[in-house]
Amino acid sequence: MSQVNTGSGVSRRNFVKGAGAATAAGLGVAALPRAARGAEADGKPNYGMLIDVRRCIGCQACSVACKAEFDVPLGATRSWVEYIEKGEYPNIGRSFLPRLCNQCNHPACVRVCPTGATWKRAEDGIVVVDPDICIGCKYCVHACPYDARFINPVTGSADKCDFCLHRVSQGLEPACVETCIGRARVFGDLNDPDSEISRQIASNPVTVLRQGQGTEPNVYYIAADHSDEHDVAHRGRYVDVTTHRREEARR
Amino acid sequence: MTEGLLWGMPVIGYLFLAGVGAGAMTVSASMYLRGGSETRGMHVDTARYGAFLAPIPIMVGCGLLIFELGSFEVGNWLKWLNLYKVINLSPMSIGTWLLTVTIGVSVVYAYTYVHNAPGLPDDRRYALRRALSWAAVPLGVATAVYTGILLGAMPSRPFWNSPILALLFLVSSLSTGVAVILLARALIHRKDADSGAERHFEKSGYILTASDTLLIGFEIMVIFLFLMFGYLTVGDVKEAVQVVLAGGSLATLFWLGFVVIGLVVPVLVELYYVMPKLLYHREYVAPRGVEIVVSVVVLFGGFLLRYIVVIAGQITGPVGV
Ligand code: SF4
Ligand code: SF4
Ligand code: SF4
Image 1 (cartoon, each protein chain N blue to C red):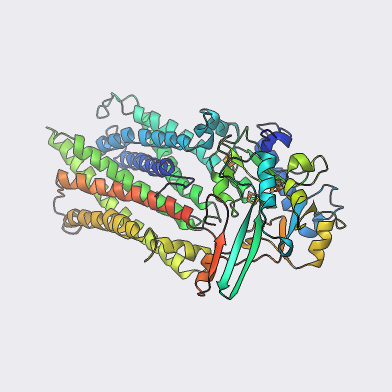
Image 2 (cartoon, each protein chain N blue to C red):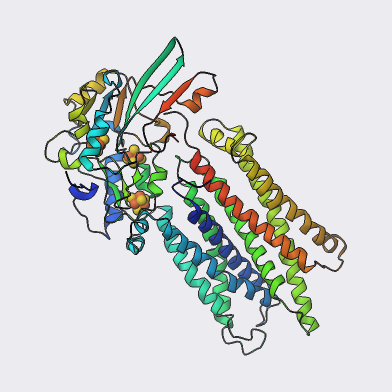
């Protein structure tokens, strides 16, 4: 498949009105209290993902599918799986943490963009980047608390997971979801209480990553291991994280 | 140490140079306004140094930023102009417009000193210079503060995400602004035959050095508060501040380079020359050589501050996943 840019499925907006529209769009979804954002709110979907870590075997099929879908250049990743190893022999464990953009309700990345090149879509809650507007200032890459963004070395613009907008808008599932052999990834509409994702979130203990950052992620996890080497080192326990990215450290 | 970081030397250089330029402009305009309301203000010669020194570092600094853009790296040389198609609440957007205005004002402000005889009563650009001085002070302060807000806006970068960082950059900018003026004066000034003018020159020198002493003293206090609250708090900020505390990877550079060489040594030397006049009203005399060395060291400290802060912010992050 040839290069598919993030912007390909994005309806081009009036450039000058962009900033205002993006802000209004972000607020429209995010400022409402959770309960008011039910299915009846405005009939628009709010896409999210649930990752059941118990079903993940760390095979990286999702990482590969994502790379192939977007021809993501070498060294960059929209999605990756971290391996978290803990303990001393014989009491050891390893768990997996698939990662992607959280399509946050309060996207820290959008708030800092000086050109209006990135915004949260009012119609489905997906946070997108228009590579034709983005100047590659890297401000959003810094601002995202999840390392979800990178500068695409081919376009020179910010790039990240867009929930496979070009597939989702055609009624298909995202590439990583479709390929997942353990069915660990569930994609769907969080506004629809009858969707599989909503039902699973309602009936399982779920968490999001770095909740303290105030971003309100739309990617939920079941049984995620939140231990981090830096945090756990003080307690003298061994934790080793392999991120499988070019930048090896989480920061 | 900047390999592999998103923001490297160009951003460090920009923060430093924009700070020096903004500082020099603020100091120049306040010296000019302080010099009295007659056409020939008492400090007009010194103010002129500052006015000429301000625009170039700001413009070079902004130019450096363009080299750091991803779009520039792939050959979209003019894409940065997209910054001017939007204005939004991103600190970088507000900063872009602010810097544009500041550069414009600094250039015209400098122009009011060109080929002009500011000492003579027929100084035609007097009114313009005076009006621009009133604009230059707040614009210079805003530019210096903005560089700190730019970095401070992100909770994902706990080392930067501090309300005091902008204040630190402001004080450092003013101090490096004073230093660059002192340096230029010491290097360029020829003794004036007119003893009155020479006295004014010495007096300006005293005011600059005394202000710098105060600014550096204040800077030490701000740094102390920055570190102390980083140490006393918990979580992300505490972890991030560790990189400049004992055992941290930037500790030696920070303490030896920035604090000792960049702040403590120059402030002590300046105090040594300022004290006799301040306490006993003796004549203020500082040898040229000393002025040159102290100014260079202060500028070096200002650069190191930006260098350390920019790196420290990028090698630390929130703890926990
Ligand atoms: S995960 Fe990062 S890039 Fe994605 S929406 Fe949230 S802040 Fe933005
Ligand atoms: S890199 Fe692009 S999308 Fe990110 S903040 Fe800069 S202009 Fe906006
Ligand atoms: S949703 Fe699409 S872009 Fe996002 S991680 Fe999955 S495959 Fe990659």
